[in-house]
Length: 147
Ligand code: SF4
Ligand code: SF4
Image 1 (tube, rainbow, N blue to C red):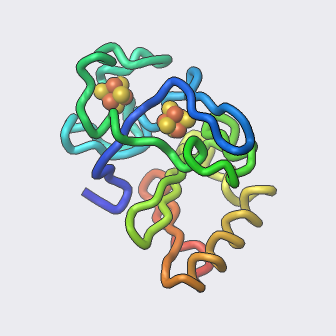
Image 2: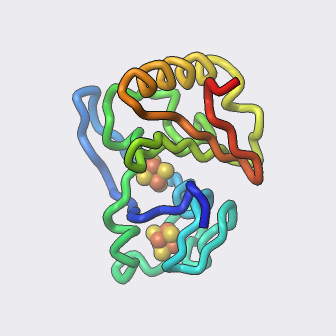
């Protein structure tokens, strides 16, 4: 297990933020990028229960799947370009760590704008509060802003 593993997790149909309704839609990034021990699912491998667009065991999915939402779904201050299928990144909080899982099929996406600037800004904000930002992409682990 590494720092990208979910301790909790889920999917939802729709949530309303101050910026309007956001939906998972056909996104399944959180069924592919994280390691999920409960399901014996390694990182960057689609969950065996995922059809590619939805969960085949939705009614019986594990509790951690029910409980998880990515930050784009819960934090309306994340701009629309952070929608996981657009950004190719999944963002969530794990205690003091802001975790960014980057799709290894799009390894350079996080270095491009507007994402690079957002990540640096998040890092500056995090460091002011004793927190930090870590990005996982395949086997690469990057602490954003670190020398
Ligand atoms: S990554 Fe976010 S938007 Fe995509 S399915 Fe998971 S919770 Fe929904
Ligand atoms: S059990 Fe369902 S919701 Fe959980 S990771 Fe697998 S496909 Fe996704």
